[in-house]
Length: 209
Ligand SMILES: C[S@@+](CC[C@H](N)C(=O)[O-])C[C@H]1O[C@@H](n2cnc3c(N)ncnc32)[C@H](O)[C@@H]1O
Image (cartoon, rainbow, N blue to C red; front, side):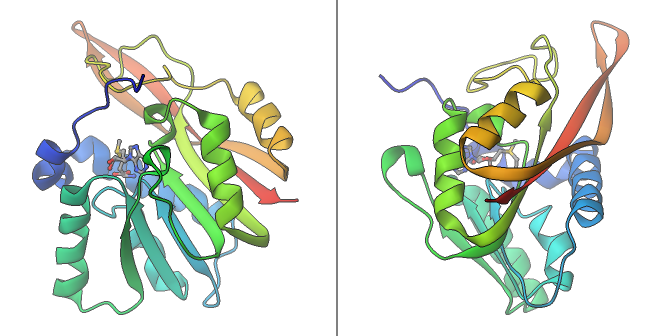
């Protein structure tokens, strides 16, 4: 039986008004640009792009970016940005691989920020990404280090309370990736029960073997 998913439809229109989300996306995009050499020949897929906060920062540096997401409302916000800025190198795809709606295309780089904790089966997601990568293509994804559930507070649709980087490295190697590297992309400070708490967010980059 499918587990209860988080509702991203109702939060899409206000997604970009949260400064923490903007900070995370900014720092994750910066970490991606440090870890992966972007080039004007590259086709990039932002998996779980949301409103395109990361995709929009990468697009000036690459040939194309496709934002893929399972939330139509999130993609509508991104489509508005594309139309307003008249961008011809950014596209969107409505995807949901767990329900059989697979992304199409072949990419030099797949990026993803704060998505993997919303997908129950990480190995299945890595397999999906592997299918979408060109030979020697790379992935670079960001998510929380292991935490105790305090980051979201309401953990509906949160299937992993962060990740252990060593365990992820093993999963990546088993899925057919090499050149696995991890770095800390940013640290989010949040008030939890009246006290400041730090939540580190990693970026893991790897290459299709
Ligand atoms: C926490 S948001 C992050 C959005 C964006 N990456 C950002 O940094 O602002 C997670 C996003 O992943 C999407 N998502 C969750 N599960 C997904 C799946 N199986 N396939 C594609 N997108 C998914 C949600 O719709 C949502 O837009």
